[in-house]
Length: 306
Image (tube, rainbow, N blue to C red; front, side, top):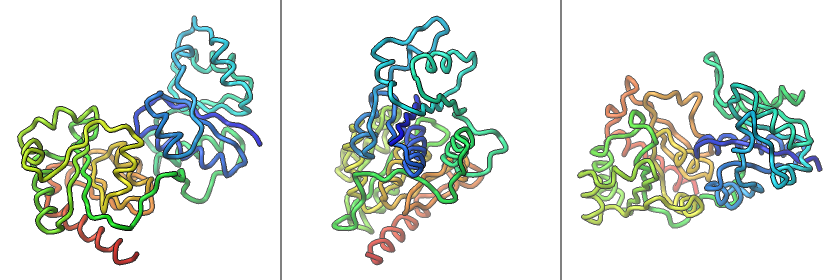
């Protein structure tokens, strides 16, 4: 079987959407591995079952770099090496080509302004064009090892941020949603805090939820632990973030809240996803009552279909 390597040095959402290309390559007969930041090893390998090579990309970045024997050995045997990477001076691809004996392909990580369609399709179609094969006519997203189950779920999982303040849902809105879920749905509430949201845990609205016992906090969980938490939820809500993408791919009923970014490009992939677009792109205009009704009806609909 032909072997392919995908390289992506980005955030959680970037990594997840790039994994869609692994699914496409598999359908084309490639045994695919992934190279990226070491913090994603347990996600890529453990959650999605894709062999992982820890990031060694610093050796590719400089025009004066020379890839080590260790890195060259790791790349040996791959017939196709795909780097989703900006490369202004061409040094990255030049060094990569020296270390990798196979067909080296670079894909720009950002779609053109006139791109129409979901981001993962931009990656896949760009790859298909460079390989000289037909692009797919179906949506590809990776098949997780850890999957959502319909049995025994009653809790709401809320991801509290996004890595960008303009995409965050206000803390006061999160508080109102958690209280309403506790009152009307009766299930538990878990607040997920990633590295970018740790400061929000000390804010009055969310700190009150934690201190009062309304919500359980989950601080910077390992990604495989996070995946298990999402897989055990009745429903998940989050902004335009990597956690929301992970929830959707696992198959958990997921409501994605979008403000200034475009869901038609950056929307999450999965079988049970609904998107709420903020009026005027302003997250504060997505009212907690609106979000609760969407979550409650989604959870009830999924469970009744079981």
